[in-house]
Length: 514
Image 1 (cartoon, rainbow, N blue to C red):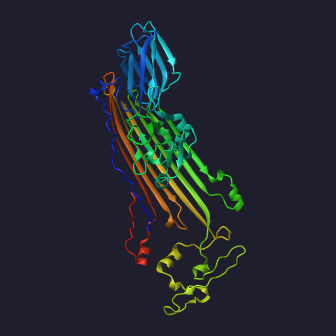
Image 2 (image 1 turned 30 degrees about the vertical axis):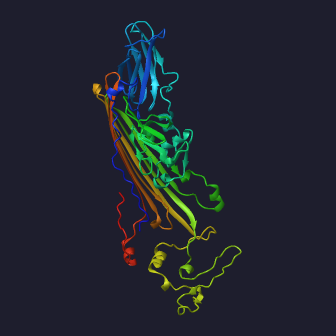
């Protein structure tokens, strides 16, 4: 019979529409925009004497996709590019009477407000001054406490199970604790406490929309590291644009570029490559058999250069982990009804008399069973079935137990991500992404598979987003996303023949788990 079944299913959640209100913008010097999956570039234009230079044309171009953004400095010499996708950029400043100023290799991280100032030098526009990269790309525009984990860290640092969320522990104050997140939702980062906050105080965003399992407050969709551009952890004084929670974990998926890139990977673990442990040698037991294969690919590139891009990622994991352990099971004599006392070192058997409650009339003294043997006729139908189906015969003479349990457990994981980006020219940029994960694992029960516990988890996360500039200082961004997380925990279904033999009712057979 099924031991326990959980169902966690969540309806579609749409993130709030991030629309800049023009009438309210007049009251503020800055630009109103939500930047949960993007960044912002600000700057001031001055000449060699430090005087403000208004009206300078500024262009920033993504070095990987060729997508440009254009604006002009205002009368105060200030400019801003809100809602800029993360990536590597080149910036140009052009004005009559001045040499062209150019900055290259500007790295914009997720939710970063980066300042890029220009000092214009009098000269011909055909001349240019180029600065390769910025000496210190520091976010001086906000006061939030944050840590950015780059794509290089995600793909090159060793990670158990290749879960990028382990990189949260690179920051100060992040630890893994005990909690229901680890027990009820597998392969989803576990119970993570940041700066002493509860594990349920983390909010997970993916490309700016929610990716939080609202029942257990774990990430619903976990991208493969090869599909991640970068992610950022924010722990204090972050913007009010975020929904809730003490800590924010904001992940940005990778996009295709003008260059075609592809990679295949396969990671192997096998007990044949492992040495015997100290405890294997001490107890003269074999190594636990292990077969683990983690494989996949990532590929991306242009459909039309500077306009349409695609990215596809697939990752799978197959684990077969055999378990070897010693147990104590009833002996043949004990199953036959013979009751014996405890036997152990320096303590011989000392059978205790087992009294037969039916050996005399009510109130009369009872006498022991003959030979201390309880007749099998006294067993219930359930007890007889348990002996026949669930209790194996001893197979070991070890002092650690008379039964060596050998079971093979499996874990199967499949996940994939597909993303398409489209440059619509003056109508802005559009992208769509779909991510899906299937997880199946078995936790060891007792001596037979009928006691095993199955974890079946399925997650889906998809999003469409459209961003369009409105004039030089405003931008409209529309996002719509859906997150679905289902987590079931159940046991094996009882055989109908066993249910009929026991003549019991109210049993749910052939349960549907999805």
